[in-house]
Length: 125
Image 1: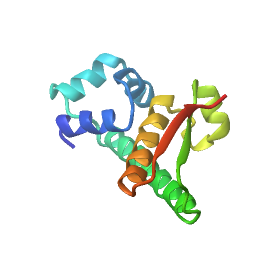
Image 2: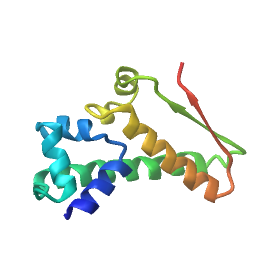
Image 3: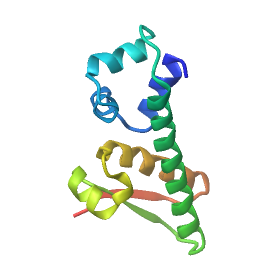
Image 4: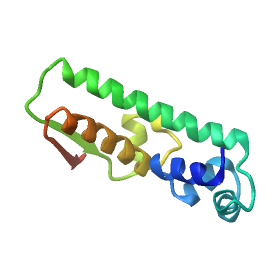
């Protein structure tokens, strides 16, 4: 994967450079080098990002299926304030920041809006 696509994918799945560095067990400077084209992103790190993207896409499809059968007038989605609460409620996001969950919520909300279903996003209390 080239550097531009790598950076675009990282941003699309809601990871900061620091998050990427933590996941890849490298310094943030190394992750910035991958994204600038100075160094080639390692294949295993690229695969990790693709896996996260696939997990998010799968989560979106599950949410659509769950609510589509109920034919709702409106959808209410919850955003978590911190990673601890997110990981407790959704273990599949363990090791990922709340911003990755937010990226998934955005994808879900866009899909429902395309279907003509209004969406609200509120913080989980």
